[in-house]
Image (cartoon, rainbow, N blue to C red; front, side, top):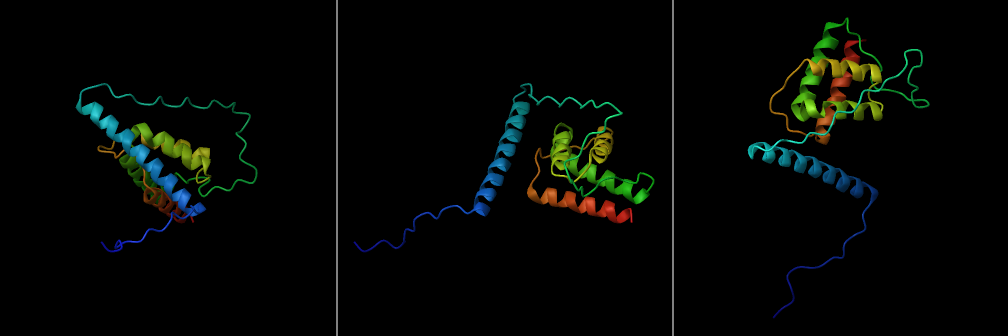
Amino acid sequence: MGAPKFSFTPPQPFRNDDLSVVLAKLESLEREIIFIKRKLAELEGKPVARPPAPAPKVVPKDRPIPAAAGAVYLLDHVDLGNVRVIETLIDWVQFLLSKVGQEGIDDVIQYYQEINWITEDVANILRSYARGMRVEGSQGYMMPEDHAKSLDYITRIKEAMK
């Protein structure tokens, strides 16, 4: 018998970049598993458990919600008098609904607020548009490239308001 035709190299320690990629993949897989479980339950005729919708935040009108110190938002307002802005908002909401459906739209919008892409006012407008739309066949989750496309929509809205 001769020497094996392969070599073994010990595993390399994770770099921070590698770990973030692994975590992102795990989160994506978790979303896919949830989606598959829901579809399986639907096919078996079992009731599909949906996570409860978060209760709306009630804030007194005389006290605005304080933004994080020095927070800068990518999209801090929208001009609803601008037809191009409205068209882009509608396209964006339809895109989001095609990815996460009505059951996931609030989570995505909330996430965009948390990472300072949009303000609460913009988030409320997106939710309002989403309530009036139905899109069939959502995949139930978003991939990183889907978030990149959301950034493109934000850029297009900002450009339309110039």
